[in-house]
Image (cartoon, rainbow, N blue to C red; front, side, top):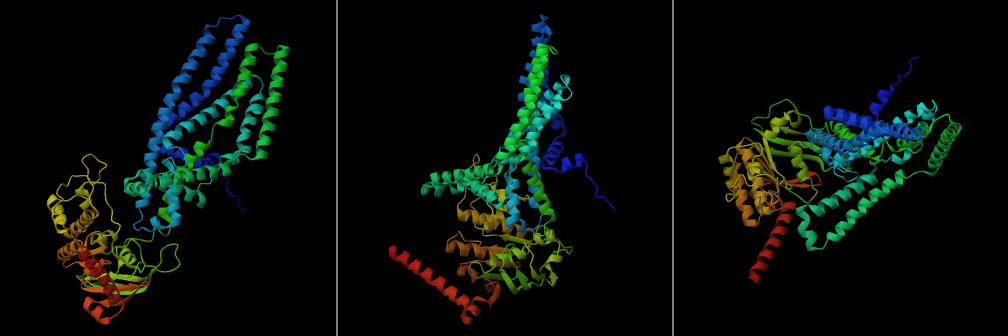
Length: 606
């Protein structure tokens, strides 16, 4: 019979979240960690030295002995206690910043490692990311550089209590076991009071809502509406309410239970009573002197620091934050979502030369029961332009995500010149693909970095801006954010042209598949027609997929497909679909009617 292997105490400590936290301190900065721990031990021993020195002074006074040595010892210990505390705080703050930087680096790497986006859109993974991301933002506890001071204080108290309990050994061998053991037992008796499971849905929801309210209040994008509609007080109340919910959830979970508290009081009363009864008896009989009575009495009281030090609330919160980051790392590397987009080996240079084909493609987002794409079949000839139209939720943007390999189909295949897209080298395929999404990013960087973040010649950037209709934007070093000195902001239409320039720059660098997801939504009809004609000219020879709700743009594409409930229900040119008299014609005429009514109304008003 094979007996299960028992873990050593050191292995068990390393496996605990506190052990993981301290190991992370060491890995982040060994030098500062050594100094931090050395100061904890030194500061913890000093109170015991102070107690001994005070006892020696009392004994010297009682015996009429010289007072110089005990006074000098008290002075030295006192000065060290005053000097080491701010030094320790500074060392702890620096160490906390190093740990925070390291954890944020690991979190960024973990979030960016999976090639797809499923891990960032999955609720369970988002909860993990929320906990990991917020560990140092002060939402559920102090930032790490501040927590280090609280953690150090707790550990110093623990060492101080143990050191003073050791002093009691000079009185009797059983004294440190009785007094120190009683105070240590309070950690076990009241262990429930420091536990808080922050990973429940209720806690995470309150944390997410509180953070969102905070960001709305302090970030500029929402400032106009908040002030216009008088929402400042409402937003403050929401934030306060969610923060109060977090405090109440923690209090409900960690409040002291009556029975453990009663037992703790009983244990401490009995142990303290026995010790001081024995000490008083020996003092009355003359077995010990006045100085010794003073030393042992103060040491017995000081041993109580054991109960208030060690694994306190700050350590629990900080250890939870570290554990959350490590869980995210494991989730990103081990979960099915993290492995869902895997690179193939076939180079994609020159593709597609013949066609891109969606063959019986079905896709369902994680956590949803109904597929967004359901047996979709679609062929896109290489070098042609295809417009995709349909009602909201029909699956248009999902089709684009699959084409960019941000997700992979649940079933079916996407073939490029007959090769499954999953067999192509992912980096090579994405070099062949360029896209502007309807929620494109507005980088708070220079104009140059917004068009070509990975560096490019000035002439190429200016050419892309001109083709996108943004020739008036020439200062490539200007930061596109009013928050920076000499920075500026752009209108919605200007931002859209900058995002288009980003796509056109990629085309000049060799991209052969262009995805335009609502590329001109913030332009007027005339500006849209102008820009789209320029884009079509600049991407001539590319395989272009356009998603737009404006049929004045859609009709310029070589072919148009209508998607409904995850399937292609109509496919053809504008004239062919109008002649068919189906969904496309109905949507086109409905939009044309509204446009004519608006134009006539404007003319009448003029």
